Image (cartoon, rainbow, N blue to C red):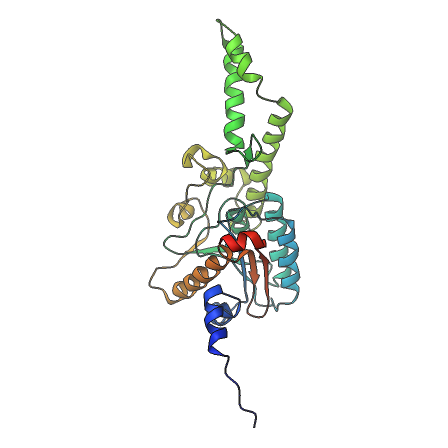
Length: 301
């Protein structure tokens, strides 16, 4: 009989230090046993400039192809956001590969912007006491690398200036000088970007957790997510109680819940990994994929 050789202690210590995939396998397996569904983990870094993009959708789909999704799918997601079109593709992939035609989104920490849109495509969203969703209005940098602005606010400022210029009975020059900083073609592109984000969110909800509700009614219900009028800023959290009031199907987990403790440990480990050693992480209990930091950034970290 061959005696099993234990993993050297140095390997275990280094694994704990770097939070490699082996530190999460057992938790992912325990989570699957508790939820009775396979779990797919999808994290992107909040520390480094990385976004949800099409390569993520491809990797997620490739990973789903190797999973038994006959009982459905749980997507555990943490991300500051990215492309709304990619969010739509990820929703499509999750629904298409899940043999129940739906999936459950779990938000252990923050799923903001396009990540919130991915949650909108789920049949329900599981949230803990401090879990965050966020507004989905697109952001744009007016200058390269500059402060991002809400597309909604840029459009509103243009419309307000234009309206004042038309109505003024005094000096027109101050308004014309300010309007020179706007390109009407860009404003129209911004209007379409805002409309696209809204359309993806509403259609995802109408074909999922808000099925049977009129799209105009859905728009009213999720108004707080669509523009910064109520939240005042794109980064402001929308917690579970407010999300539930918007009509979303929220499964609330108490901080003492054993399931939540399992989810939170997985979150702490993976969040540490993508904020220290990697940019992105996509994992199951059997598969692990990550986008590593460029070497110079890793040395600084």
